[in-house]
Image: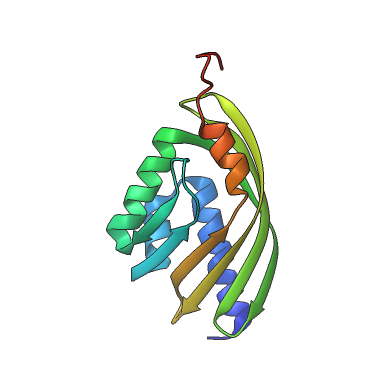
Length: 137
């Protein structure tokens, strides 16, 4: 597939996320997708594999975070698409807000996303997920 087609597939993926379209999202990813979200001390950090892992990630996200994700730039070479974007949101457990500049490194093969690696502001997300020791929010 050409880079333009790969970029469109990634744009379709982000559109499905924006719509909350789980079925459409799963149709765009390979059965053995691997999605890596680095960090610790925040709800979504981890490695998610396959459709089951992606479904788990989506359910965890829905339970723990409110966010708006805005992809701003798509850069492609071969089967790799880098997406530069911005997110802001709130961790539900703490009611703390965050802002996050991010990059997703995505591999697309045969019209399906096969891997996603997020490069996110893990400190901002961990701080928003951290409960205050005073018990106040």
